[in-house]
Image (cartoon, rainbow, N blue to C red; front, side, top):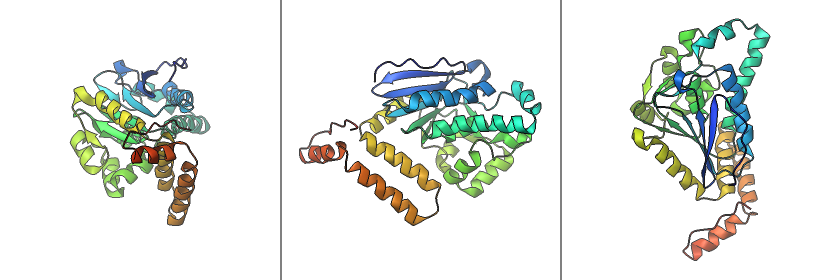
Length: 271
C-alpha cells in the first residue's frame, strides 16, 4: 500500500504498518483515552479515510499504558446535560454513526485491549471483529452509573450476541468490571496475551488474515455481520450462496485451487 495523506485528527491517529495493515489509535492518553464529542465525530472521519484503501486488516487500540478507552470524558458530561432533546439525538446519531462506520469497515478490525474499556470504550471494542486482551484489560458497561442504560452505542446488541442475554443483563445491570480472564472465558474476548506482546499478536493475527483471499475475507465478514441481523435461515443461505457465487468469478479462487494442486502458497491479487 502506498503512503496516504490521512485527514488531520485531534483525538485519533492512523499509522500504516505496511503489508496492507494499519493501526487506528485512540489518542488522549492524558485522559485515559476518554471519548469526547470531537472523538465521536472523528471515528467517522477516520473510517471514511480507511474504508476505500486496499487494507487487509485494521488494528484498533489506545495510546499509552493506562487504557484502551475509558468511556466518555466526564469533564464533558455537562455538554450533554445542557443539550435539548433534538440536539442530544443529533449527538447520539453522530456517536453511533462513528462507531458503526468502524464496525462496517469492509476488512476485519482487531481490537488490542489493555487497561480500561468501559462505557463507550466497551462499545468501541465491541465494534471490532476480534478482541485480543492484555492481563490489564477491564471491561464495564457502566452506563447505569451515570443514569443511562446499556442501550448505548450498540452495546446491548453486541454484548448479548457475544455472551448471551443473561450474562449481558448481569454485566449491564451491575456495571461491574469484567477482567481479562473472565472476558475470554465468557466469549467477550478471543484471546489473552502478555501485555508486552499485545500489539505484536494483533499484527500477527492481521498477517494471518492478509495471507488469505481478499475477496473471501471481505465477504466472510459481510456474511457474519449480516447473518447476525436476520432470523431467517433461508435468508442466511441466500446471502451465503450469492457471496460464494461471486467469489468463483474472481481470479483468486482458481489461483488458490491451482496452488493447492501444485503444493505452493497462492498468489492472491484481490481481482
